Structures are given as C-alpha cells and as structure tokens.
Image (cartoon, rainbow, N blue to C red; front, side, top):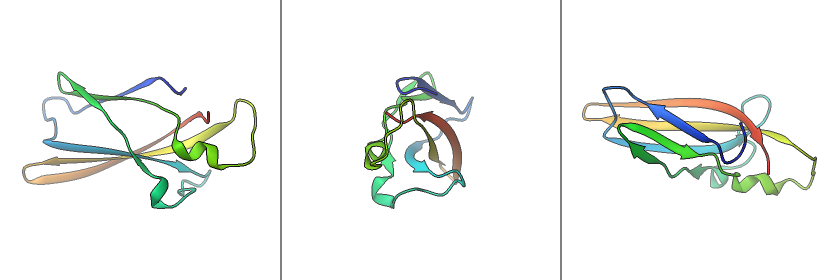
Length: 99
C-alpha cells in the first residue's frame, strides 16, 4: 500500500461501541522495531458503520539513518474493539512505502 491510501474496516451489523487503532513499525519477523513510545494511535472516521483511516507516513519512518529510494516497511496495526459484554483485539500487517 502507498501512503495516502485509505483502509476501511467493516464490522457488518455489529459495530463496536468503542474502537481504537494503533500503528507500529515491524521487522521482517513481525517484531516491533522500536519501543511502545513509537506506536501511534490512528485517528479514524466512521461512516455508515464503516471505520476508515488514511495510511499516513509513520513518525518512526524517519528514525533510520539509512535511506533507500522507494524503501518499503512493514506496519503492524492492532484494533481494540469493545461491545457491552465483550472485547476483541484484531491485528494485521501491511507493507507500505516508508516516506
């Protein structure tokens, strides 16, 4: 995916009462590259029960001193969704352009 593209999440007929989305950079093994301080909360919008957010450049992308043209990075997203009597965590990873 490229920065600027939109990611949508649809819970169908059962949208959560509360939702949070976090974003962190991953290494090739799926481990976070940096500390929890560099894991960011992702702002989102809700339209007709569908949650969406724009894939922005991650703040930690600029921490590496090694620059490579068209560099790609792995991003790990965690979604915490809560309903009245239930809480679920979802995770997914994507590969995006770094800057």
